[in-house]
Length: 291
Length: 341
Image (tube, rainbow over all chains, first blue to last red; front, side, top):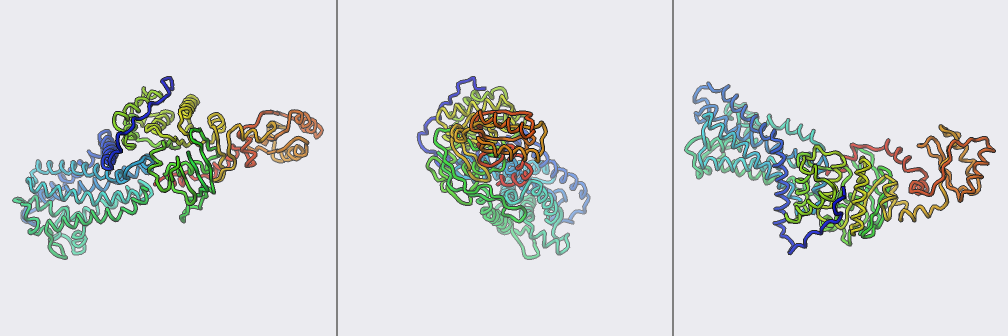
């Protein structure tokens, strides 16, 4: 095996020390590229992430297709009502799985390979996960948006699409932070999958994804009105309502919660605060685990 | 190149597991440009010491300096200097070997030209050309070890740290890795490796430390350590399959024989007896005394001192005995948890 010349040519002397930004970019891009190569070669995650909400959309849409007109707030069809919930569910499910690759890297020792390297910032490891899962969640959600349009459940228009995008980004950041925190806090992937399994569907059902607050008993209405998914669903539902204009996000009420009325801007502010709060909350844990 | 001073490390301070003192005042110094071996049974503390050198683990007490840099104060500077080949090879099964090396190059901030040239050189050096573009998931243990060695060398480190680099490898792969390590040492790279293979450390190391229960119990070059023992080694079996009682009786007899310095019963080898004799004439006296006591001699082998004898002298048991003792006490699950972040 060493028939070739055993000597290794030395590395060239760097003309100047690369900037911190250049080094962080290099390591973050390399780590993100790795996650995408994994996705391309093992696309089942991507396919399942689109297929599951698609089945929800088709089956639930058909189940309530004959619901009387005017039953739902706004008077639209159930399919149009459901679309916003399924879009949010798609992004939420994808983001909830963000911690799994990190957990597997912890368990199989690959994280140690990263930690023994002179990374300029170990936040690159987290940043790569956030970039990857955000892209994945948005691609999956976009697939649902397009499919919903093809099924006749409506199209939000350009400004509505922008609101959908901002809402999903905030939700994905928040849930990704939570999932990454769990990936470093829990002892193994079995526990992480259990938490994902337990959290996923109950959070969906205890939101306004499938039914409006007015259909729910009081206690469930309170739960749904406090559920972060609801704060993402209602602005998106407003974007699908027709004649949507961005400047109305500060004035039009999108959620009549038991504790008060919220505009789309209020919902986005709550999601932003949640994302920021969760990242700040997991930071000490990440610092402890990655240093 | 490496100075470890009074390192202490304890695991399992939680409620579920009993605490284990992995390092107990371990100190050693690895000269620059040398190939240095850490020898000891599984569980002696070798991996913990190496993980501390590589900045993956912080000691509870003690100091770590690598090339003059305080590893606890400036771990990133130390990481730039060293390459690490871990005991359990961690690879991404979905990536090809070449993609994994490219990732490694980016994590060490190599420019693309250097990175690709260096990858090409290492593929040639380690004979990886036939399979490096295949996904890592299909690699054999030897392939994985070569790939991990290449990853450790990619950024041209001044110090290469290897944890049990040849465990589970076939003889050909083991010899090939030995050859590369010797070449690296000859080119000026400091190599620190741990092993529980006596012949590996004896053949490779310029100097070595024997680690037992988290501390260094002997240190020096293999020749120095073996030479310090003096005398010849004798392995004696009075019967093909003896027992503890008979071995103890023979031991008592031999201990009173002039010219015999140390007698140890080796349970792992069918209660044979390992002893040190001052010269060849003592062996004839031994035979006479055994005959006078009506004890047969099934086998008697004489040899120069080995590192196993050094270990035996220092600990009162052979390395194999220590391995067997340790095997029953190890908790693989707890060890995996210790290596997890």
